[in-house]
Image (cartoon, rainbow, N blue to C red; front, side, top):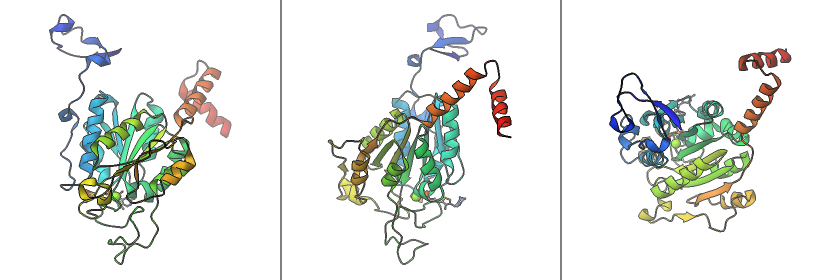
Length: 318
Ligand SMILES: Cc1ncc(C[n+]2csc(CCOP(=O)(O)OP(=O)(O)O)c2C)c(N)n1
Ligand code: SF4
Ligand SMILES: [Mg+2]
């Protein structure tokens, strides 16, 4: 039961007075947000960009899970995909290029009542943000990271990204990329992510289902969501789109998602690869570990304010 201040509430809950504005409401009493209420600015993406579909499905998730403005937290770095929080009418931050995860970690550790979603691009995640990806995964911070992978730098108008395939021609590789691309799923599994999945903007039901499963996971959940850049890499994922003659093959139903080595092997096939949850396992989260340390210290220093406990610890380090 939550207490929500409502002014001038009409009739059914009793007299409408100006002096008793606090009415107890249950979550079930509140109407789910509508798309209109969650949408902020009109997205500035190019017409046809895959990112539109991911945003629309995030709205669907908010609506389906009956989340309200004060519980929606969307964080991003810099890039076309990272403009995401601008378009969500709720709490969020469009942070520094590659630094979305440390920012989101702070939010997640301090606000256990929220489920933090982070959206961003392949460059943001695996180039400049590569080191944060590794450490957020190994620490198992509770949040969901959706990398909208278009295999190119879109915002800066066509440079090779860490997921561009060999031979990809861009402004930085005019004769075609020579460097072996990274495999985001293998990287996530080996770094210690406890939920690892792949989906594609062309399959809305699959995106929604994957985001829901990630949200329900207690730990660092990572989704590689293919999202086509129609401006600088059109047709990049046609071979995974049945409407374009490709195939959308699912992770086999008998795959044991707790088997790290089996997951790693399934992630081998890069393009188009398989879709679904590759790996999922339970491991203590950074959130739980930190909470236990705080509870222990508060028990040992009863009567002291948190800042006083913190100061005591700093003093011990001198
Ligand atoms: C510290 C810093 N370095 C470089 C840039 C320039 N920059 C902005 S976005 C970007 C890459 C965008 O690619 P990606 O993350 O894949 O996102 P997309 O635009 O493709 O969605 C770069 C290099 C920057 N803004 N800040
Ligand atoms: S440049 Fe590419 S990624 Fe950026 S908005 Fe346009 S289509 Fe989307
Ligand atoms: Mg990109």
